[in-house]
Length: 120
Image 1 (cartoon, rainbow, N blue to C red):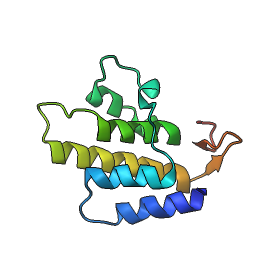
Image 2 (image 1 turned 60 degrees about the vertical axis):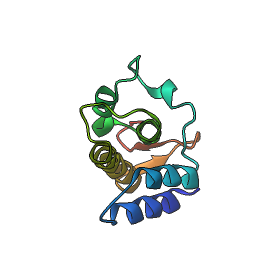
Image 3 (image 1 turned 90 degrees about the vertical axis):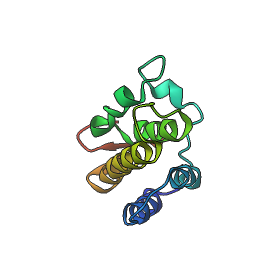
Image 4 (image 1 turned 180 degrees about the vertical axis):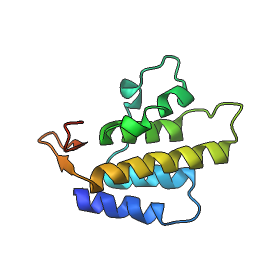
């Protein structure tokens, strides 16, 4: 899927008032960005969702898709409300994906998106 098409789908979700976990899963499937190997992108073992999600502000597009897949697939921490945690963190990831695709983003030969400052 072209960058502009992905951007449009992400922006449609961002414009909705309420987002749900299944919408993130459908977005990843529709854009071809579902990461069945999402654990390859993670740095914690066992997986620590809170720690992994701290990486969102500096994440490239590929890491964002892996983190969004993780958010859909993994158990939510006991101290977090499932809906609030997933919806809020998913929104943060979508905002980062939108930023990458809309501001100075480029697609390299491998199909990865990064900011023009060299982040891949």
